[in-house]
Structure formats: structure tokens, C-alpha cells
Amino acid sequence: MEERSLTLSPPELAEDALGFFRWGRIAGKVLVTNDAGDWDFLGESEFADLLAGRIVDGHPRFQDLQRKGFLRDGLDLGAFAARMAQRNRHLRRGPHLHVVTLTRRHRRGGANGAAVDASSADMSRETAEQVVDFALQSTSPAIAFELQGQGGEPLLNLDVLRHLVEYATTRNKQTTGKIMRFTALTNFTGMTEDAAEWLIANDVRVCTSLDGPAALHDANRKWLGGSAHADVVRWIEYFGRRYAELGRDLQQWHVDGMATVTRQSLAAAREIVDEYAARGLRSIHLRPLSVDRFDPDTWAAIGYTAAEYLDFYRRALDHIVELNRQGTEITERLATVLLMKILTADDPGVVDLQSPSGAGTAQLAYGVDGRVFPSDEARSVDAMGDPIFELGTVRQLTLPEVAGSPTVRAIAAASLLDAQPKCAECWNKPFCGFSPVRNFISQGDLFGQRTRCFECKEHLAVSTRLFELLADDADPDTVAVLKRWAVTQSPFTTDGRVSKDAP
Image: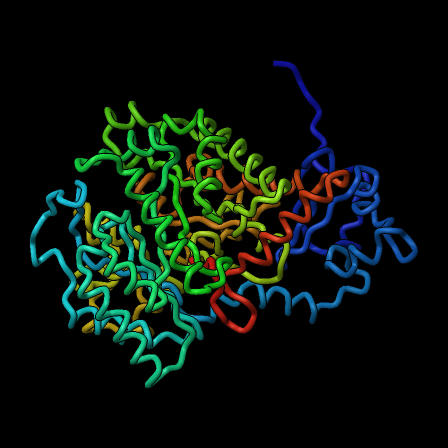
């Protein structure tokens, strides 16, 4: 075996002159980052100067690197600690996202399609009230109720949806006075004009699934009543028209969309983005499939590798950026979340991009029977027959009991990036995070292995592409686009107000 000499450290390292940082090479530059979320690009010679302790007062990079905490000389520990506290304030906010499953029923057809009819599959009005009362115990100044559609179509239990919103609004005014937001995740299968007008009048935002142009969407979502795409587009246009007629701020009020990416989607990155732009949608959430959710035969038909998905994502993101450069305002959700972490001092409140994860401390999920879970993925594990993540019921629990439960504490411990191999040394650590529950689903344990973690590959690839764009000094227009995304898409501002893209 050929012998090779390994250089384990740089030839010059003045460790006593340096603050703590991580580094990597991107776009021909050296990126340095630290735990306060500060970062900078250096040339190779500048990086060598930094390591050797030659960046001192009078050096052209001294002031920037000192201010950001990369140099020990003149390090303002108080300011650095304040930035750390700001970035990690989710640890003391309390649960702000409450994901509610109103029904386990789905409608598989058009307007006359049959729905599974089982009263036991629906949340009752009494349970909805108990969920609201439980959620309002949170110390968070802002509460977001997400009436989710993964476990069942929420509009099929419209009476209880209305009751939950009205009860929560009244109770909040009478007691806590929190900033409150409601979002219904719906595939529009249960939508009527009466329901739509009620949602608009009661400030319930709408998010739907649109997988791309008609042929692609309808191939992904078989619809007994005709074209699923036509139905989704009709309601997107309806809500957009009504918001405009009512004089709503269309930056704030619009239908958001999620695109589930299947194998058929991989060759249609531009077409999917163009479909969103053509329908006037201002954001797109590209969602990869999870191999663990499908049997081998199904995955063989619709699945793909992580590399194939990430190639698709890069092409889609680059096209979105180009559309923005041409004047079309549209964003991609994961990119905007990461950009807020990269370009602002705030954390956007997305629990799977936090260290530790906010499952159980920033997010809670509720089944139709009032059982409480640390996240909606944890509720899904229960729906598949394993109650391992159940925390109790809204009739029995208190929020302090949730935060102190062994389950929530185990999730927090497993998701602390400082204790994770590879994560602790990764330059993307200040901007990253992962879901231990997803690790449990895909790998069988909360900690998982980074090399087998799709989220790790996805977050690193997306952050790398964003930093490549930010590093291009010759393209200030693209940098301006990315900075606009970070500011306008901020889910939580420093005073706790919820903005239009809160999770």
C-alpha cells in the first residue's frame, strides 16, 4: 500500500488569536461560520492570514472579522452572547405551532365522489375546544393553528373547523390576547363557495397541493371526478379574485402551494415552477418523497435517489431566481427559511431546522381524539400503528408536563447538533437541523446516521447553492433577490408577530 503523508494542521496556526469557527470551500472561496450565525467569505491568502494570526488592526479584513467574532482580539463577548440568544430564542418561546387533525377521512373523487363516512374519524366540537384551551397555555406571544390535510381533508369536518376557529378567536380575546393565525391545508376536495367565503371572512389562510401542469398533477393525484388539476386551479383563482375584490394586501393574502416531487417531476423542474408563476402563486414548497412511506413496488415506480432529487431542486431554484430577476415574485420555502437564518439574526421557527429540534417545545400535534404528539410526523407514526410518541391527551396534560416528558427530552437530545458526529464540525451547523422522528421512521432510531439522513444531504446542498449565489460579486441582482426573500418571508419578527409565511 502506498504511503501518504497527511497534513493534520495548517503550517501556521495561531489558535490563541482566533474565535471559534467552522469552515468550508464554496465557489472558489473559503466560507467561515460560527454559532451566532455570522459568516464571511475569505480568499485563500486571507484564510491563511486568519489562521496564522496575521489579521490584526490595520488589516483590511480586521474590523469585519472582529465584529463577527472570528478574532479573539477585541471580541465583544456580550454582543456575541446577545446574537446567540436571539438566534436560539425559540428555546424559551413555547409551542407556537399547533397542528390539528380534524378528520381521518379523505375524499377521493370530484364533487360527487364518495367519502369514507365514520363519525369516529372526526374530531368533536368538545375536543376542538380542549385543543384550543391547551394550546393557549403556551407562553409564546404568537400561536399558529395549522388545520392539516395529511391525516384527513379538514373541510370534510367543516362544522368543527368553524367551531375551532371561532372558539379560539373568542377565547383568545377574552384571556391571553396572543397574535393568532389559522391555516387550512386542503386539496380542495371538500371546498364549496360557502366554505370559501367563510374562510376568507374569518381570516383563515389556505395552502394546497399543486404538483405542476395538468398532466403531471393528474398523474400524481388520481381523481374520480375528472381533472384534479382543474379543480385546484379553479379554487386558486377563486381565492385570488376574492382577495383582490376585498382589497386585501395580496403580498399577505394568497394561496400557497406545495409540490410533491415524484419521478415524473424530475424532468419538469422549469414546467412546475412556471405553472406556479402562471397561476399567480407567490411561493412554492418543493417536497421530496420519503422512501420509508412506500412499499418497494410503489417506490420503484415513483421514487428516486437523493442525488436525482437534489439535481432537480437546484434546477428549480435557479429558475425561480431567474424569474425573480425578470420581475416575477415567487419564492421557494426551504430556500427562504435558510436565507432568513443566513441573512438575518432571527430564527424562522421551523422546528426541523432548529438545534435542538422544536418537536414538543415549539410544535405540538393533535389527533382527532385529542391525543397529543410532539409533531405531526409523530402523529403519523401513531397512525401507522406505533404509539411510541404519544404524550397523553389534552384532557390530562399540561404544557410543562409536555416539555419535561422523557419523549420530548429524548428528541431534544438526539437533535442537538453540537453532539452529532459530522454536524458538530459542519460549516452549515448554524443554519441546519433535522427531525429525530423522521430518523426513527427511516432508520429506526432517533439519532440516525448523517450519511443516511436525507435531510442532511438536502439542507447542505441547498445552503451550498445559496452561498454560491451570495458569493457571486458580479451578480448583485441575484443577491438582492435573496435578501428580499429573507426579509419579506420572515415568519416571526423580533417582537413575536407572525408574518405571512409562518410554518
